[in-house]
Image (tube, rainbow, N blue to C red):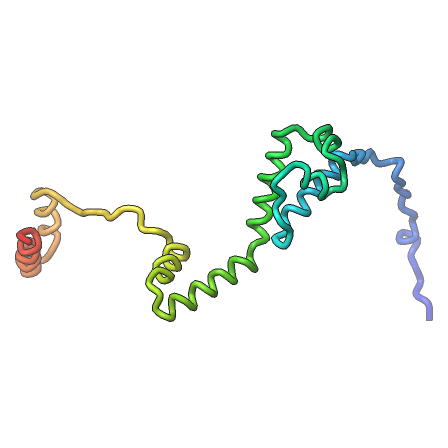
Length: 161
């Protein structure tokens, strides 16, 4: 049994063609930039140490690379690629943390310190708390009388040391 289709639902939508849309043209420079970023962002690929190797990655000559990109643009590509590598480094960081944790659990003090520094954050400065007599009296006046005498005695012992 066929369902009846209402006339409202059979109304044709306007056909959209590529000619109707103003799409930006992808240039060779854009293609090379995307290919460089894709290569450099992958942890399994080696980092090129020269512009010649960089040009070889995208299969162009050194002259073509220099034609499309000035040094500042290449620096920006390197910077963007490093950011992408950091974002994609979950597997590598997990492996390092797992190894470090195993060493720390086995009693390696250096690994313990490094693991805590990386996970909890480094201790930047030791904070020494000190106060004058007015602050001490304010604190002691907030305490019940029987506790205030005991706290004052303990503090005087600490200060003497």
